[in-house]
Image (cartoon, rainbow, N blue to C red; front, side, top):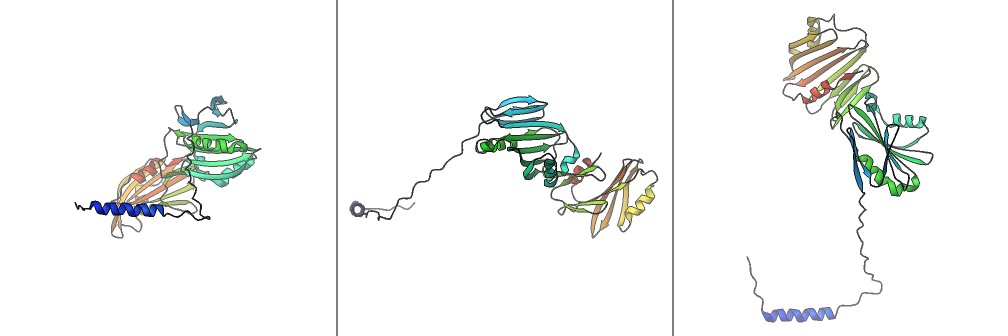
Length: 316
């Protein structure tokens, strides 16, 4: 470590020089003004308490009173008459198709004017609307068991007093049912009355009767075809199925085939573009529709995403 030696005389000289400079400091010019100090204001913390049930929990502003009306749990602010309502109904797959146009149409039919719609995730959305000088802030959450509507109602006159409280409360909502995985969405189709699970990162293509999903990272390709039919697979023998499935492929080897008439499953491997692939076929005959699913996956890739898709294919 470097050390410096300073003489007492030198220190004394510096002290004299500093005293001269301080004494000679000029007054500020007339037009100069000291800059006013800016205080950092901190927003007051919102006081909440947690309300728990067997199905969900929500943080509610302190001081709001609980009430129950026609199966709907309510919390009322005595000062502003603002309300938070939590209602619950069984899951229905059509909820997954909700978008701004559908929400606006539904609300308009009941006399509401929509001002905001935003999909928060694959299984939640936020919506704001107004009617008769009452403002509404609505969050809808769902899982595979229930759909929850969490609604805040307030007078616009009290916006500054209650809006942040309502938002904090409605966004705190958590439910305990069978969850739709993060980064996945359920896609519902009216034609065929069925739903599939898709990773949000997949590419999506649709033709007249076939939906194609593609993972650009792993090379996973899923084709879903739907046909109106009261028939089944009883007349489809293994040889005919294999001949058609193997068309145009090299080294096509089928190692599994099951056909109960109502359900069909097959698995094969083949080579293409210098790589090995697995090909899975799933078929379901519902009595109204025939659903055919073909999954192609490079042999070295993990099958987890494919299994999530297969496990969550539903027809109604």
